[in-house]
Image (tube, rainbow, N blue to C red; front, side, top):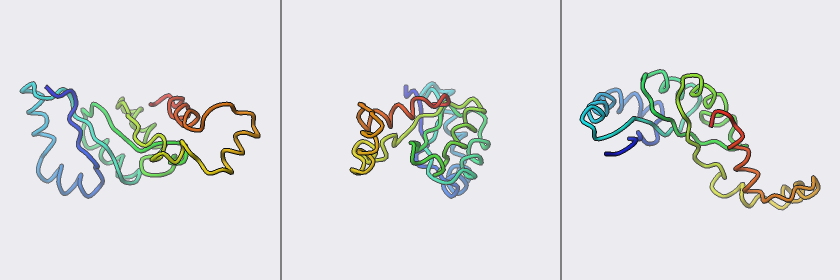
Length: 137
C-alpha cells in the first residue's frame, strides 16, 4: 500500500473547485478502508487564510507540506500556518527549506555578514538548522 496519499499543490481554487466539488476526500477515505493507502495529506501553495480553510475542511489530515524557510515566514502558510497545523495535531513536512538553493549559496554580502559574526557554519547548514529548530516541524 501507499503510506500517504498527498493532494498536491492545494490552494483555495483547487480545494473548492476540485477536491470538494468531486468529493475526492471521500474517495481517498475509501482507499484507506480498502487498505490501499495509510493516510491523506496535502501540499500547499496559497495564503494563510486558504491554509486554514483547508486544514479545517477535513478532520483526519495525516500531514501537511508547506514551503517554509527563514525568508518565507510570512509567505503562503508561513509561521502562522505552521503553528495552526500543529495546534490541530497535523504533522508538517517542509518543502523549500533552502529556497531552491538560494539559501545554500546566498549573496556575498550575506556570506560576509556571517563571517563577521564568526560563524564557521555553511549557509545551507544555518538554513536547515533554522527549520529544524522550529518545534512544529
